[in-house]
Figure (tube, rainbow, N blue to C red):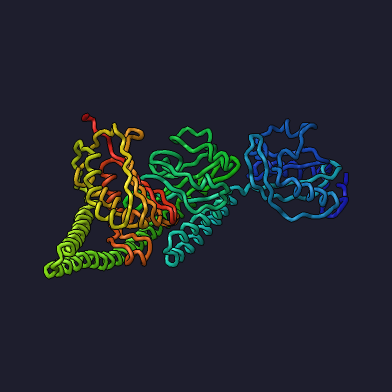
Length: 551
């Protein structure tokens, strides 16, 4: 029998004796091939080699079953391409080798390079397919791509380290690259400040509440990563039990589910901060992604530490400049405050020596006495200011009769009250208990507060002193009907050298240390000082002291 001629150029005929022999050769070669080889005829698998069965996880019987759906072998993202190429084949077109993803029976993905050819199989057209597994090649290619991106990131980082000594610019750069390299929905940075993590510089974060999260030491995902000194992956933030006291409600409202946190450590291994990336869908961050962020963190940790030192040095320099200005102000103000009363006292005494009128002489002596009293107040404040904020300085507290001290200090101001025609109203509780205080320090607090009430009051105005028990403490409030303090200035009145404005420096005497001393002394007693004020209506200063247990 003569062998059949080829029906078409390129088509194979395998029902002649020669071609039956050829088929046996084909099967022998195919069974030993490391590639997947199959024949698809009219949408049904009619031949698969051993490698196809082993790699895809199906038996020959499953492949050859009339009910077997060939499309289950193809990953969803590759099915449209496979269908399009099948149509082209059926129309007689040749198809160049192409890539698509296969799905094994157990759900694993295989990246294959697919080569196909139309053949005649037992008298009918069929598609011969040969698939080379290039999964490892693609993984290596992806790894190379990641390494190139990392190299690019490192290059950009090196450039940024030189250019971006500003902390905010550097952090924005870091979270931007992290989000880009990982492809995450959000990225942000948490900075360790005073034993808590405060989060800064957010990308992809929507809610203000999330941006205000602060993690106390030992709590949350950030501290978990810092304590373990390695990256922490959380596929589901809300079911992971490794964290202590996580802010789950705020995170849930933000909609983030999966997190990768990478610690930033100093050269000595001390915590600097935490870099986070996060997604709003459950995500398995790969080891490659972890390695990428670890590389980023390792390279920029030093830069962050340097930027932090730069910021701290800059702040310290500004503080030194401020201190230098304060020093100049102190010298100017103190010189004025010491010189003025002495000049007044000296002049009054000189005139008194020559004054023959008794009444005139008494007035001049009283003027000198008032000036020296004012001088004494300035010196007292300066001595107290010199010892403020000294760590080893302790206030010795004893049971003290507050009512008696208020009366004594009031009496010191009687001449000034008369001169400015001011009315003093004392509303002291008849059951006022003893307080725990240092007597001389308490008197200095009262002198400063009553002195300010007199100084800044209007002629003919009123001063009130209230004292009573409130919430387990004794509260003393001193009010006036004077010039008041602007709302934006209230928060500054307890600062060193603060005076309301430059004109006040000349219109009203004082070194600008009085209220700072009041705050320091009151807090040293375990109390607190507050102020309420309104322009042109007056001010109310209140402070608290602990009640003595001694009756």
